[in-house]
Image 1 (cartoon, rainbow, N blue to C red):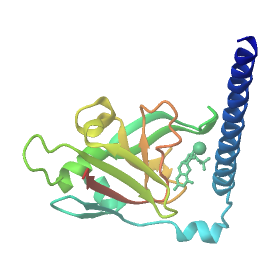
Image 2: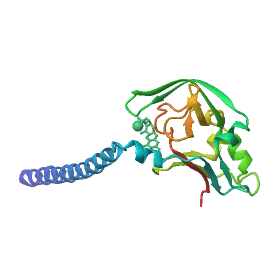
Image 3: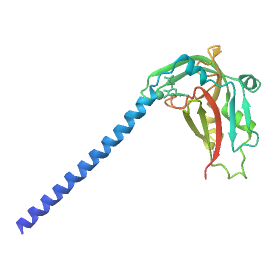
Image 4: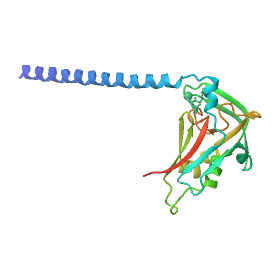
Length: 197
Ligand SMILES: Nc1nc2c(c(=O)[nH]1)N[C@H]1C(S)=C(S)[C@@H](COP(=O)(O)O)O[C@H]1N2
Ligand SMILES: [Mo]
C-alpha cells in the first residue's frame, strides 16, 4: 500500500515537471517574437525617405456614402478646434511630445461628412482604421466615436504650436487615451470604415 502511494506521488511530481518545461518553451517563443517587433519599431528613416511618406490629402473610404479626399485647406473649411496642452505619452510613460496649442477637426465631424452606410439604427458595428503611409494603424469603434466621450476627443490635427505638423501634413490623435502614443498616427494617409462581418 505504502509503495503504491509513493509511486503515485512520484508520478504526479514527474508530470508537473513536464508541464512546467513545456510552458518555459512557450514563453521563449513569445519573447522571440516580441524582440523582432521591437527591432521593427526602431528603424530610423533618412530625411528623404521620411519625406516620401508625407501625404497632401487623406482619404476617407470604405463603408461610406461619400468617399472624401481631404487636404489641410478642406479641413480649414470645417469646424476647426483648438486643442491645448496635448502630450504624446509612449508605452513606457515617457513624454514624447508636448504641444502647447494645436489645431484640428474632430474625426466625428469628418465621418459625419462622409456618412457611414448604416441600415437602420441597430447597424452600429463598424470599426474605423486610421492608417499611415508606413502602415502604422490605430483602430476606433463606432460606439467610441458616436456614443462615448472619445468622440469629442479624437481629432485630425494639421497645426502644432502655430506650425505645420512635423511628420506628414496631418496627424490623428485621441486626447483621452491613457497612453496617447499608440493612437497618435503621423503620416496619416487614410481613414477607413469597415463593418464587422
Ligand atoms: N505613422 C506612424 N505613427 C506612429 C508611429 C509609427 O511608427 N508610425 N509610432 C507610434 C508610437 S509607438 C508612439 S509612442 C508615438 C510617438 O512616437 P515617436 O516617438 O516616433 O514620435 O507615435 C505613434 N505613431
Ligand atoms: Mo510607442
